Image 1 (tube, helix red, strand yellow):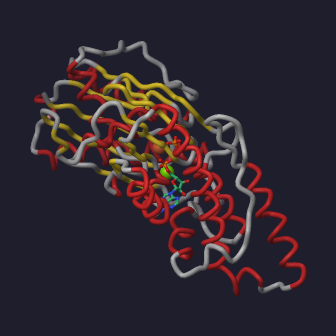
Image 2 (cartoon, helix red, strand yellow; image 1 turned 90 degrees about the vertical axis):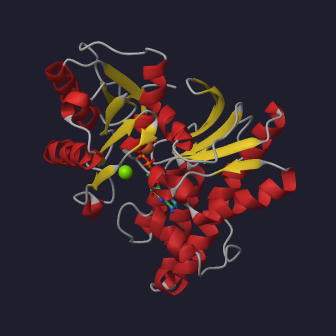
Image 3 (cartoon, helix red, strand yellow; image 1 turned 120 degrees about the horizontal axis):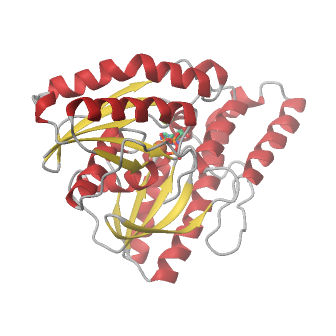
Length: 332
Ligand code: ATP
Ligand code: MG
Ligand code: FE
């Protein structure tokens, strides 16, 4: 069984070929057009997908050593994501599957972020709790089986990736700023400045408060010292990152306790964060958790995770029709 998978939910155009459950490649074209805008511009994203998709798919097929005629199915991201971006991937997948006479497999992007854990060893055992932290989502998911997942907690406002990116923007860093905050934080003191840790009930997250706190903090300090950011960049990054990580860990600990689960995974773009990874290792020792962290290339958006999810759906015979439409707000 050979499946070609396409990811186009946001600003990464990606294609991957999976053969009998083994990922053969993962071609990713990142869109740089958004850097100067401090965020993804939807219309520019869909146009860039149109430009990148065919070369990316071509490269994935060429480098896999599998011919188009040997493909058993075409998989694509149905949602959630930007409507225009999803539309490009969905339309291409439909036409390609129709032309080849093979079935289509629709994939939920958030489920795929979690299923990225099954690409390489070590693979988490069911049931496990996954903390999915990305540009658009912050979720605690109880994963009972490959295709049986339940959201047990999520954010009521901003995603944690958004909090990283918005903080970076306030600091004058380019988009996406999350990885840059991670880098600067390495040389900073995480206790230099204090920001509030939100106190939402149950397993609910909130990140809008810290965003506002950072905004006022910078405004007040810049009034007194116009060079405040330049002189304190590492400390500011370390302190904000520390607060964001503590906010996440507080709820993760609560979820693990409540559901009595010791298999803990993280997924999504923010799971690339080195501070988060380190904190998780510390908690693993304290609570005797088995912690699972994906490889860097499978944290941020990629088609390999879509291909992995498609492998499981193919095994279950779960296909979709040519009349399928993208769903911007698709739920797990
Ligand atoms: P979603 O998956 O919710 O639809 P998305 O696809 O835009 O959103 P991802 O590609 O999974 O999100 O993740 C992108 C996010 O990850 C961005 O907010 C980016 O800043 C953040 N990110 C990536 N690397 C790091 C890092 N090392 N530290 C902190 N944040 C990071
Ligand atoms: Mg992205
Ligand atoms: Fe994503």
